[in-house]
Length: 212
Image (cartoon, rainbow, N blue to C red; front, side, top):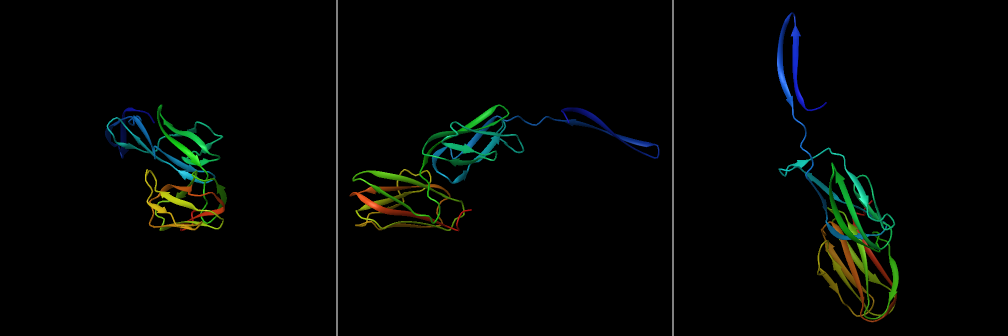
């Protein structure tokens, strides 16, 4: 099927009727927007990106061919449907292209936390370690906990896109907690600051319901 004008004729018992139909070509893609446009990725956990295609008038376009690419497949790969999986820490740009137009998003991949699986580590005084956890939209709870070990680490939890933590847990010793009801969907960043050196500390983030 291509653009143009066509005449359709219907005939029955020697009688006919015609209709002239003009087929208008679909509006081309004028802009490609990938969201979030910047942020963090957890290693080993797939994070879906959102794509919006628009024509020159701003109308949303559907059912177009889209190609996804990663600037560095050693850091993160992206599927044909826009699900990004970080393989190691580092910076990466993900690009979506349709009909010659492109949109990109830039990310920093951090060590990822799988829901309910603890990660044990140590750190020296006055240093921070950063982790990322993916919280699907519609999750009902996020619980982040530090347990075990020695020393005095403090914990800070940053919602998606935030520059300031929405929870600061600074209790004496290695036990810290940040709990959220109906947390914002997206990638959360967890900072563990070594107020004093700590060893054998276990960090666990639990998302409810458990992501697939």
